Image (cartoon, rainbow, N blue to C red; front, side, top):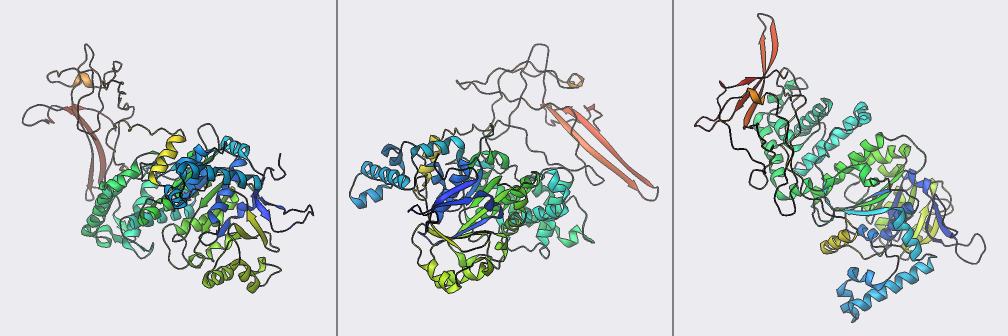
Length: 609
């Protein structure tokens, strides 16, 4: 085993000193526990900032520590470009033909050149292909493209579900999740800078979200549109709802959200694997994962919306975990510019601040990176313990950085000397300000095991995802239309019969003929309905694309008819007679074939209350 291969220690490169006197630079061995107090990586374009981040994530994977990576620029997909054999044919799909043309060589020759560069670079860093093989054995790497079908799509359908009980029981956490959810939703439909206190839309939306969750229901955008149009609340504060936010304004807000879910771009967010934090951290078999969430293809508002929801889900997941002082998982964001500004408060900033303040107790390390040190909130970064500073050539960036960092943690060097040192750093050279204080450490990053190909194109992402063994999920089977949950109460009610079976949707055979289904048990009270028999079928009825279909196959002696079910809550109130009574009524009636298809006189009463 190499001298640097130690559990709990990240091999990040070599220091610019020889303390042990062996005639060579010391290994830069970073205690992974220090990441529990979070880290910041700063450096201009070309400083090696992305390479350092990839080194850090690789070392975490070697130790079995999972990482969720937010990739706004498209570089971090390089984590999946690991080639244990270091063969030119492995590099060939990822080299740039333009580079080969500029060098007047073939693509094959360029691939061979890159393979040799990586072989030599790894050897100079005391690494080889076998270490890459161990990396791939210790963790699974996945590249997700939320809102894009060219990679592994993620479905946001469950992102508004009710938070875990631990978060629901913490009033402060619940209020924060509600507020940031409302902010991100409004931001997505074009209402930016909605103040949680002064914005009527924000207060109204927050009230709806909190009520839905506290009543025990998950939130969906269709149900949100319904609530906006027909609020389940009568007052906000001491004002009635129509005075606080008139119907005309509520309708306009509902139209914004309706336009959102009707757009093809947003529909892409509803397809894919379930968005679940534990499944991003571990496989079904418990193997640690490095999940790269690429959002480079999204518009700015969509990026902010996605990152905000992700951060909220990270907080909710974190609250369900037991406290620990060791590093349990990493959250890495490759470019924080725009999400953590010094003055404005975009939707993602508040949950990110919460993570920086509280994640330490749960063993969740936050690592942020930026090439724009002049435009981040250093006051908010006061909880960051470790700083990695790469080359910064502009005086403004250096001044802003040094003002933001805590002076007492930079010992043995003046600010002027430090600024001069930062300006003169070479690519892949970084200055480490340790969390425990002391003099800063100058080091050079090791060679990344991953091939740093730069931002990946959509075609490259498709190829990479297919090579990783991922098989796109088949279209989800048709289900019944989503029902909007309405908590029972004096204003309205929603009742579902207990024991109602789930619809059976058969799988299609290879020839495209629906497979036969077993004979079902007759539904309750079907025999009580009268009317002419209908044709029995054993194949799925034909319907236009997108229309949910479920059916029961006909069997001898059984007849199934289309039936309309009605559930009604009647609320009777008479203050003069001191009467207040709620009655639930349920009716079933067959659909006829005449001019009037529904005849409620031909009904079957069911007691489903």
